[in-house]
Length: 115
Image 1: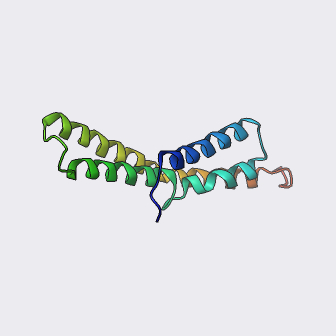
Image 2: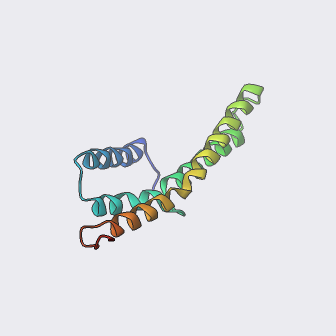
């Protein structure tokens, strides 16, 4: 795999910004859900990936021989790890998309109303 650069990551965040702008334009809900769904995949979505990234950053910093071994360093590493768990806990957002899709499908204009 080629080495990542800050520009690669910037491109990813720009894509997210474009998605947000697009969603502000009130697209069709089914299309909006389809665009957001990969971001919230329970295995590969952003919450899981960001949690993994934060844990990997904590490990890389802590394992580096030039990292100072101070209480402040350990506190900051602990904060990264806590943030990682908080992000990973959001992996259940994919259920929200499932429920929203079901709600929209059941409430579509083609669905007969109950009498």
